[in-house]
Length: 141
Length: 185
Image (cartoon, rainbow over all chains, first blue to last red; front, side, top):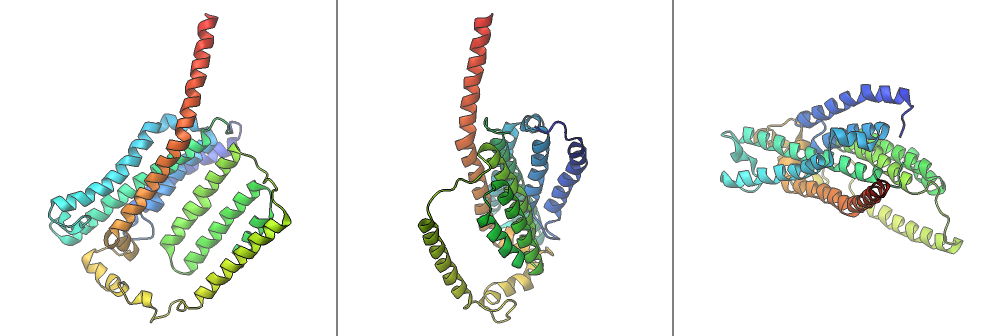
């Protein structure tokens, strides 16, 4: 791919850590400001996609192998779904977070945090997977 | 809005698909700015990240697989008919907006059903300062679960269609090189 674009490579190396950090900020600060799991997942995924564009899909696959993204894809959905089931087991309705802690408001807080984490994981994994599959096609580059 | 209109015209006219994907990215970014003006920061965030970021990258990825130039097909009659259909549909949609309440109208139905409950009670019931998040993840938890499944299904679909074709070709290549080595040795 772009092995000789020194400026792009150096700048991207400076940019990728803040992008990932900002994604985590958006993820966990979504309760208080704009953002949430979906946006955070997209930003997190775009950090990896930027890396893939500049250094090649195979380099990214060394950092994040395909089985890991597939695991993340499933784990996110399961996190969301099982949070609902946990509500059921603890005696509430499906996806009722009030029963997750002694105080309903705390329960809501935990529930939303966990559920958003699930959304973020799935979205990030989906973005990385889709890009890798597209860019890794034999006719590509 | 004017910029968005100009972008849409340019996208329809330009035949260079690389420029078109860039322009659609700018279109999304302008849309995100419009959402910020309407005080919908969460939506603007999503639009900027997905519309302007990821989908542009995916389009470029697709362009790398196919060609850069649009093929010219169909005659003038075909495009005229298409234009008439699009214009008629657009006119119906614009006519439909005349019945909608004005932006920020206090007595609009959307502000009377569940919204007062969200605004007044979500602080006590959910305890989050960002009402959008409480609505999205708690009151409308099922919808968000469904959305997550949509994303999951999209990625699974892409993997099922494109991922397997690639693996098969890799296997074939591996077989070929393996066979070559054997014969060489």
